[in-house]
Length: 187
Image 1: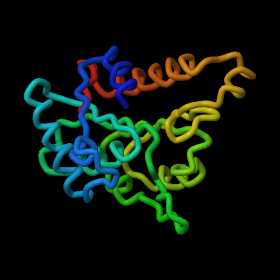
Image 2: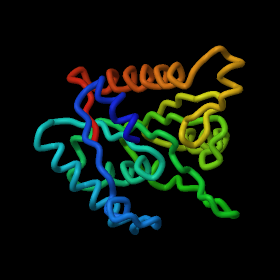
Image 3: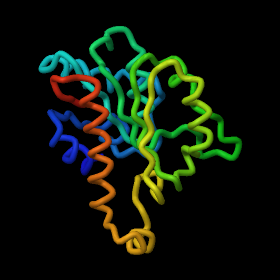
Image 4: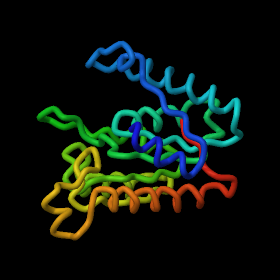
C-alpha cells in the first residue's frame, strides 16, 4: 500500500499507517476490534486536519475501513476505496465476508483483479446487488489480489504495470471527485 499511498497523494493528502501487529513484526493480525480501534485512532488524527475523508485500504485494510465507517463518529467519512477487498477467506470453506458491506451506507469503489481468489467477481456482483450503499467496481483485467498483472499478459496487451496503475488511479480520482468537490483525503 506504500506505493499506492504515493499515487493517491497526487489526488490529495494521504495518511498511511501500519497496524500494531505489522509494526511489531507479527504475522497474525490482531482481532478485528483492535484493528478497527487502531484505524479509528488514525482517522481521529487525520480528522484533526480535514473536515471530510475518504478511507482507502488494501485487502484487510479495506475491510477494516468498512467496519470503521459504521462506527459512531465516522459521519465525516465520505466514502471508501477498497483495493483487493477480501470478500472470501483463504480457508477451504471460504465464508463470505459481506455483512459489513450490506450494513454500509457509504459509497464504495471496489478495485479488483480478475485473478483475485479472495474476491471472485461473480460473488462480489451478488453482494453488490444486495447492498444499500452505492458501489462501483473497477476491474483490473488479469490482476491478482495485489492488482498485479502478469508480465506475459501485459506484453500481449502492449502495456506495463504502470499503465494499469495509471488507469486504476484515474478510476479512483473519478470516484473521489464524485464524492466531494473539496478533494479526497485518506486515512
